[in-house]
Amino acid sequence: MGGGGSALRVCADHRGGINWLSLSPDGQRLLTGSEDGTARLWSTADGQCCALLQGHESYVTFCHLEDEAAFTCSADHTIRRWDVLTGQCLQVYRGHTSIVNRILVANNQLFSSSYDRTARVWSVDEGQMCREFRGHRNCVLTLAYSAPWDLPGAPCMEEAVAGGLLVTGSTDGTAKVWQVASGCCHQTLRGHTGAVLCLVLDTPGHTAFTGSTDATIRAWDILSGEQLRVFREHQGSVICLELVNRLVYSGSADRTVKCWLADTGERVRTFTAHRRSVSTLKYHAGTLFTGSGDACARAFDAQSGELRRVFRGHAFIINCLQVHGQVLYTASHDGALRLWDVRGLRGAPPPTRSLSRLFSNKVGCAAAPLQPA
Image 1 (cartoon, rainbow, N blue to C red):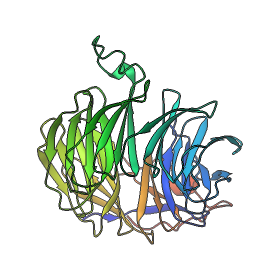
Image 2 (image 1 turned 30 degrees about the vertical axis):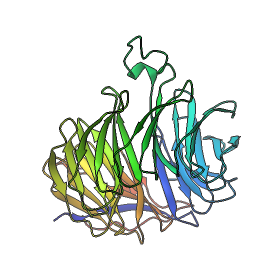
Image 3 (image 1 turned 180 degrees about the vertical axis):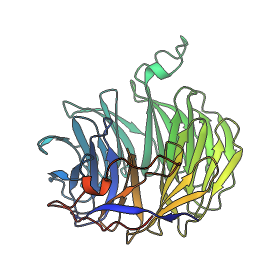
Image 4 (image 1 turned 45 degrees about the vertical axis):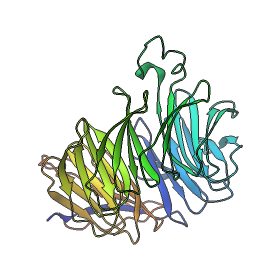
């Protein structure tokens, strides 16, 4: 049984639950999006809030952070782009007619999914909608993009994949593959008997993995639409997925995470100890971090499945987590962003500096007392 984790800092600036947490590619900043209608930028150097992003007229459902720009989407039907240095809103993307669920920035394009049953692609700089992807019979929840250079160059496929492929998952029980250049539906992936809640892409293998309320994960060839295999051991909805080193990690409402061989569907490990649904997971440097509806985050040895540490302190479900350096960041429906010391999880040498001193209390956040590990 793992020991308790050390809380370095508690950032309780938001006045509503935090729905998402994004880490910039360069690792310098974090972005949180909240039920209070705002987003906040945080420095990973000291845990300080460095910008408050205000402008949405309803709660922020999701956020995405690039090195030079932040993106947020909201129940107010809009998406916004923000300057990460000034916190100024640079662009408002209007066109969706219901809650915007997810956004994705890739190849200088902004993709979005919505309760209005569509996905859309926008010009990042100009704010104009380039194309609408219409065909799902219900809410579009999740999305992923495969760039054209990741797809095969067979002459028969060149035109179809010229702009890359967008994959969307819906509460209608299907996933769809769209040709970004034309807006045409390339394939409809049918087989799930429940809503598609999550998906990840293996771009080199042009394979999509989808997780559903039907308790299965399914692997698909996104070019042919063929269902390749079904992963069937969960006893509840599959809520989150991650693909790492040819292994698929799945978090479920059955209170477990399972690890599968991506190429065969064989289940190789089950991670237990959660008391509620597993809401989020992240693999980092040999450790599997999970967040749960039981308000705890956990660290497991990814290879052995051993529980190494439990991080207690949140009051409600942990919606998202990120890891950077030796710090775990957890964001919860309780409105707090918590920072945790994760040194020593894999037999690391003794620390050479004090993380608690680095993240000591400053204006804007409340520092948490260090607890014994």
